[in-house]
Every structure is written in structure tokens, then in C-alpha cells.
Length: 128
Image 1 (spheres, rainbow, N blue to C red):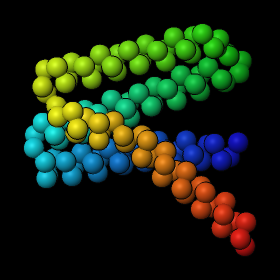
Image 2: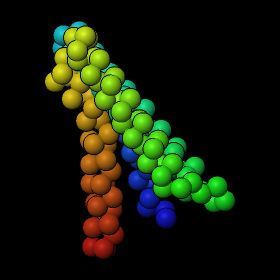
Image 3: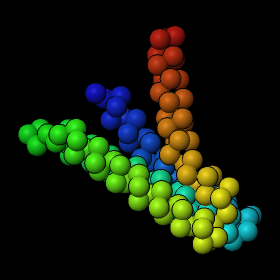
Image 4: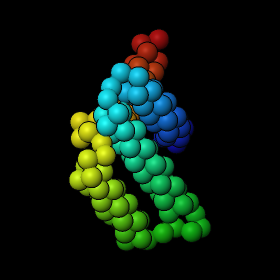
């Protein structure tokens, strides 16, 4: 149980750190629409991750266990709303699509970093 808590905490913090760093770098070196894509994409995916974590935590905490259908409905609603927001941002040409994809990859990057950190801990613990 400890490893799951540690991973969730690492990913949650890393999301905001990577979001801030990528947004700052994009604002300093890229065009406005590219930077807006990075900021909007990072914000969408980070907020979505937090809502997912909150939904799962409340659904899996006794004694108020939620049905799997309720969790799936919330998941798909978030997915549809996120897709609609992304569609509007691209259709209105507010953001650069490549910057948006870069921003949307914040959570994936933080999950990969967390995996590498935990794998290193496990490998070096075994080697000692």
C-alpha cells in the first residue's frame, strides 16, 4: 500500500511541477499560440487527473463504496468534456495543436518519471 501512496503523491506533485516548467519555457521561447497550447493542454490534463484521483478515492473508501457504473459515468463525462474543450480550442485557433499535445503529455511524463524513480529504488534495494 505504501508504494501506491508514494507513486500517487509523486505523480501529483510532478504534474504541477512539469506543468509549471513546461508553461514557463513555452512562454519564454515559443509563440503565443504555442505557449497557450502548452498551458491549456497541461491544465486540462492535470485538472482531469486530480478529478480522477478524487473520484477513485471517494469511490473506493469504505463505507461509501460507489458502484463501478457511477465511476465509469464520471470518467466518460470528464472525457467528453475534455474532448469538447480541446475541440473548441483547436477549432477557434486559440492554441497550436502541437503545443496542446505537448501540454497534454504532462501526466504521461510524470507517470514515466515516477516509474523510473520507483524502479531505481527497487533495483538498488535488491542490489544491496
